[in-house]
Length: 457
Image 1: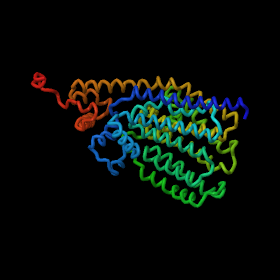
Image 2 (image 1 turned 180 degrees about the vertical axis):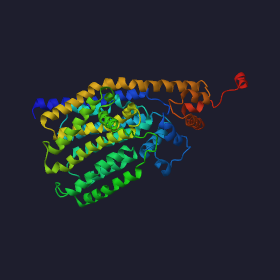
Image 3 (image 1 turned 90 degrees about the vertical axis):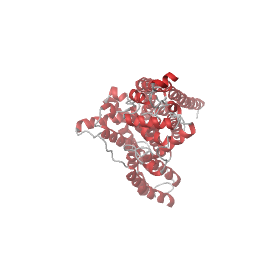
Image 4 (image 1 turned 180 degrees about the horizontal axis):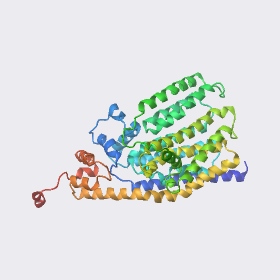
């Protein structure tokens, strides 16, 4: 290696890690500034009853689904953080930030192992995962479930890109990823089922590996080939709601195509089909490179199949989200919270390009993805402001009214609909928080003061 080449690689290493550290601090500062200390929407019925001890923390209660999701792992994490932080409702927000930051760092180490060195374009990973386009998930503790699911998707892609030989230990780690996924979000069911064929491929090519799969590895593969589909079946929760998918096939196809573009964030709401076309084109290119690219040795065959399955899994996940929400408005179909779920698609495209794309296309794709996300960062901040800032204002108003002695019925009348859609549930949970003497809610005035009480005061 020439001195100039070595110096260039050192500069690239400094650049990508400075981007990672700077974006972690910047995004953390935004979470600290805009994060609210009041539960929001799903938290009122999915988390608060456990915090106030209204519901016991048992296996049965943890297994109870929330909408179409089994959220055992996120629930346990949030309840543990609640105890550690003394009922700070921002704890899950910072957990989400740490998960995204750690995943970004893990991907940087993965690309270093795959390529052998860093280039400046590898800053794509922190700009993808630590941008403010994830604000809908970063500013609500309950959304740690979607952050976990997105991070597991990234780790699955890193698993297949990092090593060609599926050893027993690595297969066990992959099994752990796929087993945890459905317990965080229904997204894990769709992705887990899509990736399961990898184990069948391992069995089919078990003698072609260098060295061949060990007997222990074969046993693990055979068990996972059965266990993961069974777990997905057990965790599947039919969606029993009024959000019925639309029957108009043309509109459904339109929503599915647009959902593919959510890998680039809510910009798809503004630009539309061109963004979706780029996402689909990159996915198709990645699949082609994995099938017919420059790296076609037999020893890499199994890992290339794994990367292709991750691409297909997230394309399928995007289609499933669009189908499941297609009965709602387009803004609901393209909800910004889905960005975190779909972004592993671009992670896999980047890894596939580094491993298998022709040299010219590898540089175009990796540099292009990095530059696009650098350019989109300010747009993500501006675009999320209309959601983030009103939450901050509303939470401050609620806290001030509690301190001023506004009675519970009036609090419900003023704030139900913003923090939770059902008045009765909102009032009940506020009362429970008051009775449990948790934070500012301990000061809630349960009923209007009488004239005598006001005069005595």
